Length: 268
Image 1 (cartoon, rainbow, N blue to C red):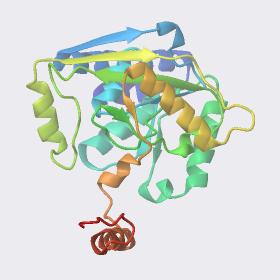
Image 2: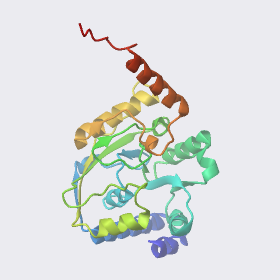
Image 3: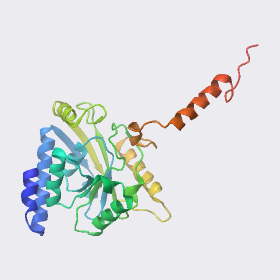
Image 4: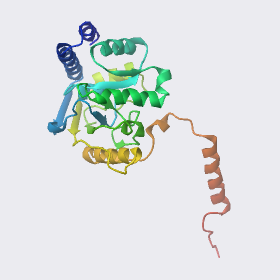
């Protein structure tokens, strides 16, 4: 991937460069999925995301990206990392207009929104791939979709992904396994079996705000993938519980103990 995108990145912007870039991404993704004994079934290919659109999907693992790019190319959105991942990101962006942000830029919502709007305004650019949950979920449910992806405008192409845990658990529990340990577990599993459903494109309706639109898309993905729809923010698994919330729960519990807030028992 690094060698291929670096070589393609040296070419001047042209239709040939775009074609070679897509070829490199598709080929490398397919090699990676094959190395994981991946068995992927794609449904409703007539609804595959189109250029100038936004593809949103439920998120289980970093290999979600590989599975989706095996069947089509996307522009990635994310934060610039260091180390090997950073080298790969810098090589990829030379060949394809991925949208990478520095850590300081990620905090500026207006800047992020502006760059994403500029990207989808160009109908020649690849569709943006976004995971609105913002974190990996264990593929039994779909949690809260962040509204930012749905404030940009444009056409949303929902994608539902469902893994079969019978042959290998694709979920990345980042608080338990680092990336190397996770990849070793994946590579030593029997297989990675996944169903991918492309769904009809959706647009924001008149009078519908970004939160309502996000919930409508999330509901459609959950139903298609046979997943439980939950309203909670998946990012809370890493957040420290606020002291005010603890105090509120302690007060409620103390009221139950002393008898206030619960029906008293008549022992006579």
